[in-house]
Image 1 (cartoon, rainbow over the protein chains, first blue to last red):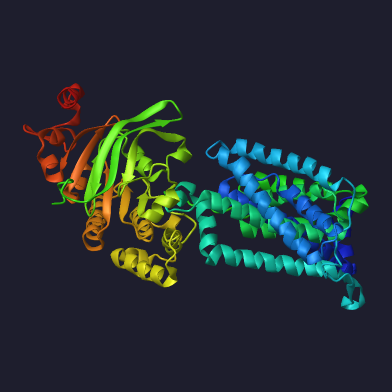
Image 2 (image 1 turned 90 degrees about the horizontal axis):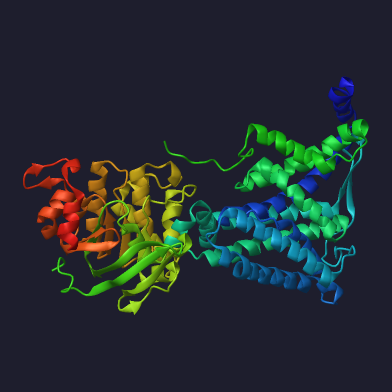
Length: 317
Length: 274
């Protein structure tokens, strides 16, 4: 037994390094998507101290809207633009109807409000789009669907081109976001608001503008995630479960750290795949991916309550 | 002269305002004051007298703390401003430096200063010029410009907060308790810079302070608040010579220095509020 846990998996990894790479690649791809969702959470949390439970459902909603527009005969790229407009309208509405009236209320009330938004979006989405599974318009968006076949060490490694595209787009999105946050006036304002909302108000930063902006950015991220995940698994409200995967990512990475969200996402994606393939399937008959991330996050929380990369609490003594 | 508010153009006129927090807690019970253009006006008083609330009522930062101006008016250059949001007020040239500094801890000092220019639309060249100006007034900030503000000293944070306010090109700064928690030497340094900014850049200040002694030395006119009311006002020099102010706020009386314990509080109520 001990041998199966401590020795065999590693022997397998060394024996078939190409398969190990394949597993890691699969993990990386899902990890990137977890990271993107977590990034949406982090942005909203930093700028408004709201734990936005609705981030996951925004992914589904964005993907469904995109597919819905296309089904109405709108060309693919115009559908993307229209979906972005819908996400912007959604951000403005949420700010007006939910956030603005609740300014200054305890955090838990705002959290409950985001649960309300989640449930509303599920119900509203099902009325408009129906509950059945839909196919993401991968080809129409010009995303390549073939695959690269590599042969490292005489083995076999298959990289699906849409996954490669997802990884590249995600990386570009993150880079653009970081540049925006660090080098632009609006980006600085978002970070300032995260540090001290009263002071941000006092220098003339408008909470309302920033909130709409941040929710809209979260909406863009949601759309990208929705396209990438939808291309792998189809679009339906079942996508929501991947949104919950962002929770352990946040526990691991910390609620406030952008790099934490990215690294946490990648780690969880890869570790859960590795665990599933080398430990879960042989020892427990599989199905570990559903819970492994949460257990990992709990273990991390025991030792580092602020998460692995939680924003350093600056305290002067 | 500056110590006579009537002789100067009035920038800010606060008229009999009443502030209630959470719909029940009455904090200001009718405060009126005038701030002349180009002056430093001090707002003095002990803990809980209502200094901070007065400043926040002017800058409209009360709303997020569930406070509300229920009576009276605030006029800036003759226009009623109590319904504007803080951002609109900053654009008009009134900016508040809050008590306790409130720098953005994870932003660098320079980024902090740049956020101060958030409302400006006059281009990056003008902003860069003003950044340089702020560094000239606060050379220490230039040394620390790449440090995260959270890791700088209390004095540096206070300078950073004032510098940040300056970056909005204000006509008037509402400065709340700049001396809080600072060594006397630093307090002098900061007040000195405030005075210089006032004289050289023409920025008007409304200064809320507990440190009555320092505040009266650097300001032109003073208001004394107690329990949400203005109980006394006058030119700073007169206030410094006033026996009551001396006794209650400066700790000196005709019989010489006195322990605060010996001052019976009902006496001042009798004398001032009758």
